[in-house]
Length: 164
Image (cartoon, rainbow, N blue to C red):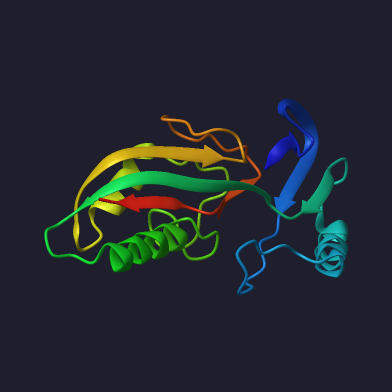
């Protein structure tokens, strides 16, 4: 992110480049080690334009949990359906393999309630979504979209899915 300081993302910071490093690691919140950040900084330092400053950091994660009540089709196992929905949500909210294109969550991209509802509705065995709320960062449930900051990624939280 050009001209943005990670601690003051609402203010312009001319001459500052913030580079967010996302390592390809099999964990729910991949974070670069201090050594990796130093190595990237050392590599970029001689290549930067004079008068600019480069900050190398990991992403800020915003934990998102989905609370939903879902109506199952007749004859569908409620336990299996609940597990399929949770797996689909975890996959979609993955920083490395999730997102709308399935190629990782785009840095700073908001989460839209409508796409979560569509995702749940497409799980085999779901008749419809009765209610849906998104819980962001441990705050209370909300019925709207979730906005992310420019250096933020989503991490899946503990979803609460009730199948009726």
